[in-house]
Length: 267
Image: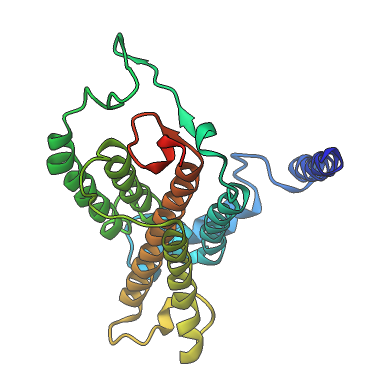
């Protein structure tokens, strides 16, 4: 084990040295108005983003259209992070080691068997807060190309709803339930939607991620807007599935003392 730790530190040191050298000798200074990105790339984005992508939000146009290939790998990294958590936490510890003892909340010492979320009005949570979060999540998704938000934020909000539903309301029928395998599969589907949005234009004579060649009977700029939306949907599904996958993997390792299933009884 110590050998693997040493190798990890060595690789990290090499990569850190590479970043430092690149920062000093290769990358332009932050805010340098005479740098190549400021003179050429940034200027093009500012002058042409709305016309090219039909997206008033220049940030979304840049990261999901002009730099869609880069963002695709960011989504893939998130998916791989979820898979990595599953692999690391694959072994289940003994039941007695999975029980977390109660703590003191709001000045009250909880005893064994007391609900850990006794002070929360569960009816309000399930009937009001969760639907509001979901509505806002879909608003953020479908308006990401014209305002603040997008796939990453929307996916995190939907996953937050799942976390609230599972952890805060364990004694009710959950709004939606996913196993670790299902959530990992859903995260992979999100990445696949992203990739296929880039591959389809290639069958229509375009390049990878060139939304102009999407086989949709609208003008070119509108195709870019649709391509951005498809990518954002893929990112939303990927982020949501990854966060839920990580949560499920952790919950398999730890149970709270007020859980009533077989694990707390040591069976």
